[in-house]
Length: 471
Image (cartoon, rainbow, N blue to C red; front, side, top):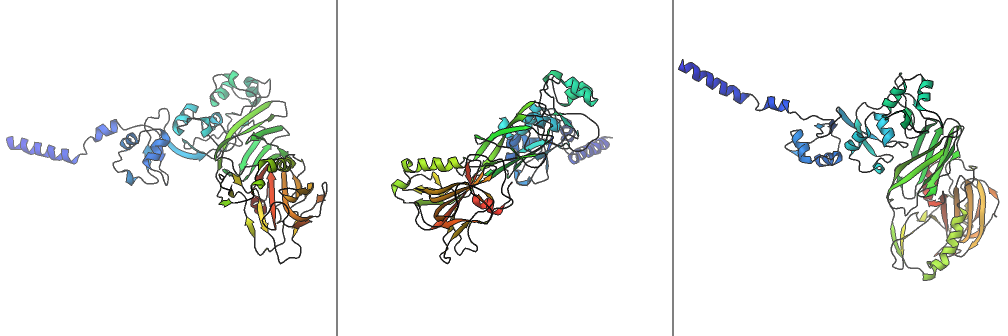
């Protein structure tokens, strides 16, 4: 009998060694929370910072002993986030959304979105930013709506054949009184399908796009809206008024240049207006601006050529010419080159180049594109790149013989240092028409054409307009 007990004890000990220690306990205390799929380039520290979780706590919750073994596609439980389960995915925030509309879009409470994305400020919800949300939570409601002035949520729900309380719950409202006129609401109607339109704007605006995002210093920003019926539209970007102009039957477009010296960072883009029934609305979202890739030059010039007493009066006149916004769009397609082609020497200076004059800081920049003087031609003629109306043609101290053309919608082109001007103020010109001849008038070091493009009162990179069709 004693031998039998010894054999049993030995077997039990051996079996104990073969059973993974603490397995039952691990299952009972397994951490709960949403699951994040590791993306290429992720590190444990990046993920921990993104969710506001200590990295060692994240490692412990997932049994990670060697952080170097973390690989794309791995599933990580994110501890400490209560009230949400499932797989987390990363989406890009569209233009036209805010915290409230994103909460309604993904059916996630605002406080959970804030926690998931470690949001310290609504400014982090800028157009194009990454947003972490639960997978498959994007709304399938096929209809958006907004209250008109004087309309109640009860009336809206009745008109759609819905229980008012279902609309209140779907939009996470405290009561029917909390819905505001012009605010984007989502209606819990059957049918499925992907949601259409920007949730942060009234349902009368079915499309909102910000092209070329993120913007870069010297870019031309293009804001497009598509509406149901005519509405009053306005707004601002970089502290400049946005001028929305009709583009087709139900479209509006605003163009705005980004200054070459604009500090990289986030800038508020505001939209405001009035719907066809008189309901006012407003919206704001941050848009990012990135630094351009510009060369740096140190130049020595006569001091009087950079003396503000000499340059400022002429600058104010020249910049003032490009401020009015003509309602007619006169150009069509990509701008033509303003000089004869092919040119044997190309460009002598590019837009945006940072310049230090006589040891100054690099707080000057080249405002346009310089075309070389072609000595193989008897006359270096300059051609209008697009249809337009001449708003200035005459001599200036710094710019020499200069011409400016209005192409409509706040877009202008300028031509400096001409030997001769062929046009006069008020002339309507066509694309390809000779408007002057290049030279070396004004303050220059040699003959060339200095070519500028203005958009929304700001000088932008002309090369973009010679390569891309705007808007």
